[in-house]
Length: 387
Image (cartoon, rainbow, N blue to C red):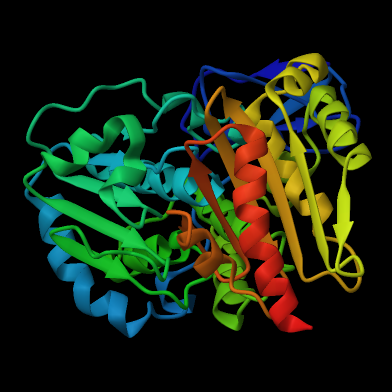
């Protein structure tokens, strides 16, 4: 694989372009990190690109609920030189994109924004602008904390004490299971992604949205709508995505990063899962599992297994897809995808998890086989009720 590196100039000013395929790697957002070209070519050139080209007057106004709370949240930022951004554990594109977008939008106006994410941070999100900064800066004590896409403080994982001990906490989320645990709670369940709410906040504050922030916000929508395929793909989400492209987000680069940059080990791991699938209730229930030994043999990691659930969720008449992932001797992670009649979030909540109506998950303190038996007993009962 070929790699390119850009040095110097501001992130909003220069873009690397591959001479062979004209792709634009994310070196536009980083002055220190090397990135692979899309086609493997080592030949590229650097061209000037202007920043925000869209006047604020051309952007749709923020949601009224966001506009109402935005001044109080801004006061938290205005009063502090440092603001800490925290993601939920097992970070996904929505939580990481939201945190990085806030950092990239606030730093040009003089704010320092450490981004914290409970290790290990999934490497699948390497393409997000600013990803290399995650967990690189420890926040000073007493800083206000923003936590994104987390239904409660425990979702911060290793950084839960940072949240619970903060004097001021701002909770930005779109999960129905959110417990409103913070000082200020911006929770709107009709948003396709938490990043949509962050975008509304930035518009309400009337601050510039640099291309790096726009790309992160676009990624939150792209990932949480499953590439604009899930039923949460609303007109508001599509409108926000279009505006973010106007503001500098690169939809081709981001789609390539999300859907077309997985390592070969990920495909080997998916092959093992697909070979061992179980089909029940006339193929309306599909489930599979992968053990730690199978992950090691394929060279994959537990977080890479998360991508396999979307392959399970592709049958025509399917109602439910479940993937069991052995994360340790007595730890099993479970991903759930539903189609129409079963609420995935409610099912996950039955086992202490959560999520959305069509996509949810949980972590069980059980060995793999015991977790399968426990969850499938509940699932089969619900599937029988649909008969």
